[in-house]
Image (cartoon, rainbow, N blue to C red):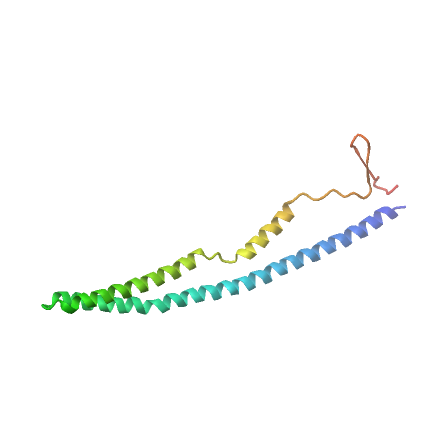
Length: 153
């Protein structure tokens, strides 16, 4: 009679089936998380790009005033050149500062960091040693394990 081994095989098949189902669910959840996080990251990146685009006109206006100031310096009258120069420097500073701030925000944002963390945790769980099954084994007083024979008796 091999009743013990048949039950073990059926139990093992069910266990492998549950493990495959759980692994499939885990992969599906990781993909859903990645998709959601990628969408969120793209929205944040789009906002930062919009900030850069919003500050570009300040740089262009500053450049126009800088050119006007340079032309005024070359002109014989020097009175209004100083005013144009100050306005140009203010516009250039504001535009350049805004673009630098938005670029810094883009550089510091980690893309898909939650997905990477969850994937690292899952990989660590798979890499961890499997727990020793406590069923069908006996431990003697000297620490030696007595295993069930292969025929189930």
